[in-house]
Amino acid sequence: MGVIMEMNYNEDEKYLLAKKKVENIKGFYGNLTSYILVNVILIIVNLSTSPNHLWFYWPLLWWGVGVLIHGLKVFELLPSLGKDWEEKKIKELMEKEKNNKNKWQ
Image (cartoon, rainbow, N blue to C red; front, side):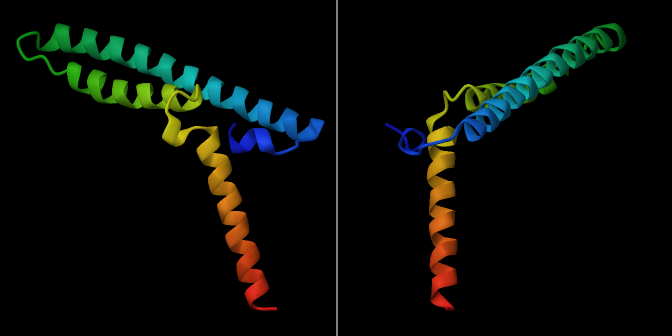
């Protein structure tokens, strides 16, 4: 089980976590929608202005990689950037801060 399962959250904290998750999903779909719309426009512009020199695939490819990584992160399919990693890092930073405060007391 991940770190998130070990923590006991009250209802307000669970709500805030769920709200953040929904905002992240919404952000991903906004990114995906922009990606599709802008790239359709770029394809039309490229094909209508310089059909002999195709360049539209570069933004399509690189932005597509970004959208893919964003989606993997949001839907927690990329283990190194998932919720467990976030929770471990938060716990580590909190412990480090606690140790720093204790050191000066």
